[in-house]
Amino acid sequence: MSVLYFGDPEGALALLDAGVSLCGVVHGRPGGRGRLALLRRVGDLPRFVGLDLKSPAAVSRLAALQPTRLVSGFYPHLIPAPILALAPGVNVHPSLLPRWRGPDPCGWTLRAGDAEAGMTVHVLTEALDEGPILATRRVPILPHESCGHLAERLEPLSALFLAEIVARLEAGEVITPRPQGEGATWAAQLSPDALEIDWAKPAEAVYGWIRAAAPDPGAFTGLEGELLVVYSGRVVESGAFAALPPGAPFIQGGALTIRCGDAASLRIGRARLGRKATSGRALARLLTHATGA
Image (cartoon, rainbow, N blue to C red; front, side, top):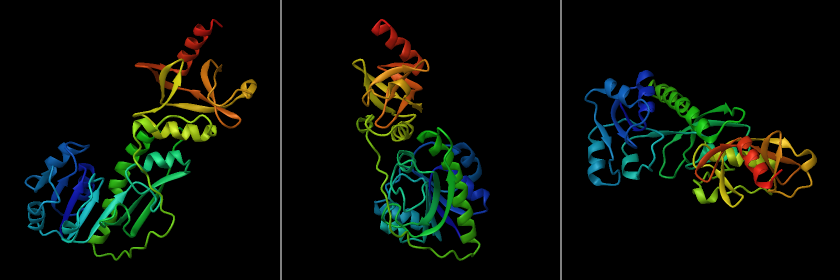
C-alpha cells in the first residue's frame, strides 16, 4: 500500500509519523511549515512543485508511482478527474461539513457566531468539499480568537486527524462513508473591499466580522475622513451613549467606542488609522484633541 500525498509538508510528516508509506508528494505551494523536516525524512522520494495536474504529462508521471490511495491536506487546487481515477482518495477540510465548504471556513465560522469549529475527513471528489464523510472532530473556538489564529490552530490538528484516519484505512479498517446531507453552506473568500463594517448590525455580529478579517486584511470603517482598519475590540454596554445612532463614535473607558445596531457598542482595541498602527486608547486621545474636549 502506498499513498500519493497532495498538500503542505505538515500533513506529509503526520502521515509518516503514523506509519503510512508514501510513494510521492505533490506540493501545493513552495515552502510551508515543516518543509525542511520533510526533506530530511523522505530522501529521494519523488516530489513535485508547481505541477500542472491538468496536463497529460502530469497524469502519466503520477500514475507511474502506482499509488494505492490519494491523500490531500490543504492542497490549494482541485484535483482533476484523471488523477482521481488513479486510486481512492481522501481529503481533510477545516470545518464540520457540510457547513462551510469552500476556501474560507474559519472566517465564516466566526462571522456566523458558531460555537465551535472542527475538521472533516471526506472522500475526494471532483466537486470541492462535497465528498461523503469518513470522520469529523469538533474543536471549541477560543474567546476572542481571530480567523488567523483559528486557522493556524486547526491546520496541525487537521494534519494529525487526517493521518489518524488514513493509518486506520491503510491498516485495513473499514470506515463506511456517509453522505453529507442537507444544510450545506458556502465559505466564500471575500475581497478586502467587501470587509467594511456595518455598524447597523448587532455588536456581537460586528465583533465576529472583525475577528473573521483579522489579522489580515482587517475589517474597516471611516473615522474623521480617514480609513480605520480594526483588528480587535470587545463588546461593551453603551450606557449613557445608548441614544447615539449606529456608527457614532464616543469615548468610554478611555478608549474609542462605536455604537452598533443593538443596545451594545464595540470598544476598539488594536487598529490602524491611515498607515499608522494605533489603539482604541490612542484614538480616544486623538478624538479628544480634535474636538477640543
